[in-house]
Length: 472
View 1 (cartoon, one colour):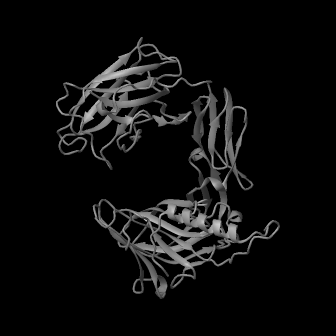
View 2 (cartoon, one colour; view 1 turned 135 degrees about the vertical axis):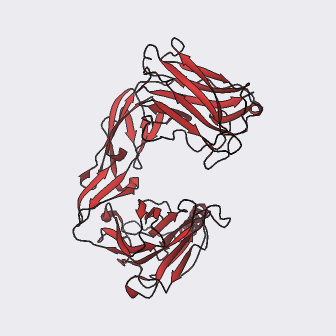
View 3 (cartoon, helix red, strand yellow; view 1 turned 90 degrees about the vertical axis):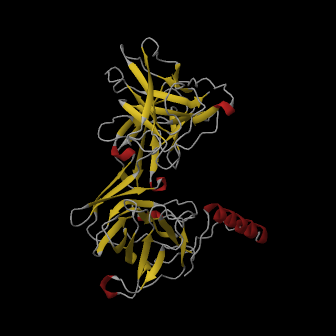
C-alpha cells in the first residue's frame, strides 16, 4: 500500500512516454488481438486493502487525512479506513480528499450493480462528494453521490452503478472529498468497502438537465453542454438513491444535426438557424429531460472594449484578464427565479440569464473583495434577444461590504443606476455605465445585483451580458 500525490498532468505525461516506448520498441501489429481479461475482484477494503490499490490525495487537500484504524471498526473487523477532516483554515489543507486506484491495470466490474460500504462519523456530518470512477486518467466513468448523510452509528450505504456493462477495466475504485462542517473538522470511518450485485434495486431512472426540458436561445457558432446528468435507483426498502454520472455512460442524440450537433461527451455545437432537441439514452433506458436549442441565427458580439488594461479591473470579459469571481449567478433561494444559460460563440464567452427577476454576481466568499478605490465607473454590455416589454426598467447595483468583508455586517454601502425604455432596446447591445466616483466606500466591493427595479416589466425575460468591468 503506497501513499502517493500525483497531478493528473504528470500521469498523462507518464502515459505518453510509455506509449512512445512501446511504439518504438515493438513493430508488430496488434490488430485482431483480444483485450486482456481483468479480474472481477469486488473487494476494495475488507480488513485491509486489496492487492494493487494505491492512495492519491488531491494536491490541495490535507495529505495525512487518511489512515488505517484497527480500533474503530464495523462488526469487530480487523481494520477500517479513517478520514480526518481538517478545521477551516488549516494550513496543512482546507479539506480531506483522495482517490484510491488499482495499479494492476483495473478491475472488471460488469457483474456488479453498486459500490457498498459501512460508514459512521464522530458527528452527523454530510460527506460533500463520494463515489468511484475518478482515476486521474480521464475520469471517464466517474460517479458522484453528493451530501452523503452520516450518523454516529455504523450504517450501510450504496452508490449505484449506472451501467455496469462499460466497466470492463476500472481503475478508479473509490474517491471522496469532504470539508469542515460549519468550520469544524471531524472524523469519519469507512469499512467493508466493496462492489456487490445487490438484489432489489429497481426503477432505474437516468436523466439529463436534471430531468427537465430546458430551452436555450442560441446562435450559430455557439457552444454549450448537456448538464444535470443523474441516475436514480430505488432500493429494496423504498429509498431512492441519486448519483451524478459522467457523460460516457450516456448516448446523446440531436433531433436535427443540421441545427445542432452533440458529441460523445455532451458538448453541443450550434451550426445553423432552427430548432434541435438534444436527448439521451443510458443503455436501453431513455433519459428524462431534454435540451432544446432554438438558434436564431448569427450572433452579433458585444463591442470590444478599448480601455487600457491598466485602467480596468475586469470581472467578466475576454478582452482583459479577469479577477477571481465566486459566481455569476448565486441563485438565492427561494425568491430567485433567474437561471443561467451561459454560452460561447466563436471563442467569446457570454453570460446568459433566463426567467429573470434578479441575479447576483459575487466575489467575497472564496475570493477577496475588490478594491476599486481608483475606479470611477462600473460598465457592462447587455443584449435583449426578444422584444423588451413596455415600461421596463433594469437596475444595476454595486455593493461594498465594508471593512468586515461581510454582507449585512452593518457597514455596507451601495450605488445604483436604472435603465428604462426606450434605452432598453431589443436585438442590439446596450452599454450601461454606473458612476461610482461618489461612492462613500469602494475598497471592499463584494456584489453586483441586476434586478427589474421592483417592476414587473422584465419578469421572466432573457438577456445576455458581456464585458463587466470597473474602469477609471
